[in-house]
Length: 150
Image 1: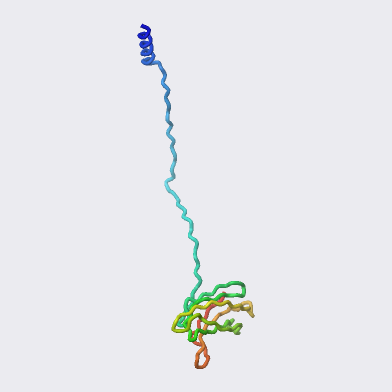
Image 2: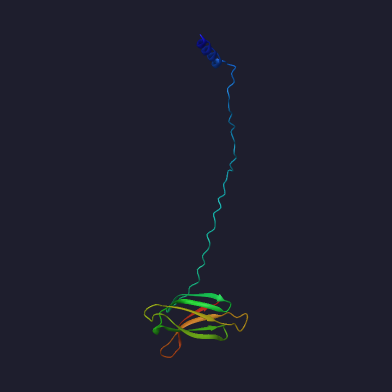
């Protein structure tokens, strides 16, 4: 009988309507999303290639300023006996002259790379580097390639 009383008591407590059940309530969270979204893309760095100069005897010639009065000249030349001349002038005077060689003679295209230093005589003058081949007959300038220096 004890078992019967125990079972009936448990049954009564289980079916009791007054028993409070633990309930949880979920709250909805509302997020406002803007109607327009702005996407900012990172700018790609601009790669500035040096200006290249060329003519019949010289190609892919670039000039890079190393210092205030110093320049590096690189390129290729198709020069008889691989020797060519250069001159720097300011529109009035010839400031510097010289010669260089390529690593191959014509008909091949040979590479050259040299550095020049020049000082302006007049502050407002513009310097021009002229690469040229000297004529084997009379030494005159042939195939001149003028390049404005900065």
